[in-house]
Image 1 (tube, rainbow, N blue to C red):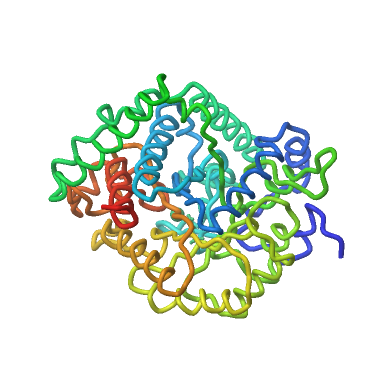
Image 2: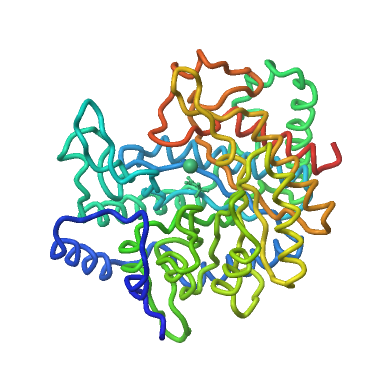
Length: 444
Ligand code: PEP
Ligand code: CO
């Protein structure tokens, strides 16, 4: 059967909203289909080339952002702070790993979430689950929880504003990024590794100043930096409507983002999400957890990368610090034996979620660090290579994950817990994780 952007509709589609009215849905999808795209095909092609280089060991991928963006957080200070922490982390990693970086934001479209149940019951009232701002609103009222197709358009609009602002910030340059002395590093003093962290940050500043002296001018590295977007390709009406053909190129591009990925709950081989993603030119990711079998994994490689091209398929493993050693070696071996080309990325967040005694969803900094550390060493000992990390983080001072230099405790979680869904590393924890990874992989 010839693939079309709407072919997915003939397959079982899990995790989709149930819209009450097919006519208003069709009208919204048609409107979305006519709007300009958010990214261009040549940017998508360029990212594929970069991911092929990462597969060859010439780059490292930093992918990060919110678990779910919210429409309300489409604000300049939130976008600026998130971009800043990602760029600071990438500078730390460039310095420590001595390799080029590919930066991919988990933003400008990360508005939809898979849920464990379709419905939620509170005090005897049952309503549709909150599926992200692309679908409905989080308040527990019938009106808020009703899936509204107009939100597909609102999501596109807010994604466009986000990406527009990110492009502007990067073109304008974030001058103070080149000056780690302006970074917010007060937290460093709380770490037993304060001296080591400070030395690394000083060394980054020194290298930048040295290069500026050599160049005889300010470094404009960040003016030329490329930044990519990604989101979970979950609500397929949204993805379908932005899937286009472009002049003088073959194939269909999803132009709502550079890098869509399939979540763990929607990675069934016969399902709609794999069907949709197999037909687009973009690089695609798939989240894989402990339940993945060898047949399933090879089936994903066959379906999503039949020509076995470099830069096309990214396997994002999210096992949990206590499970990665049991599962990752067999998966690496299976892919190696079958001679399949993939880029391996570690998501050390989603296998390490736990609930506190008082019912708050959290993650421990040490578990996150442990999973990344093991991911590097398992790949190395299996003759493979970890090509990147996928993180949930924010540039804000939230208290959602435990631990880190300030050693956030359960009682601290109440102070600034803002996530509607998964707990994110805050600014300090994100930067600390980058410093630790740089020490793991660098000369330090
Ligand atoms: C996510 O990335 O927020 C997510 C739901 O991940 P996973 O599909 O790996 O559970
Ligand atoms: Co999440």
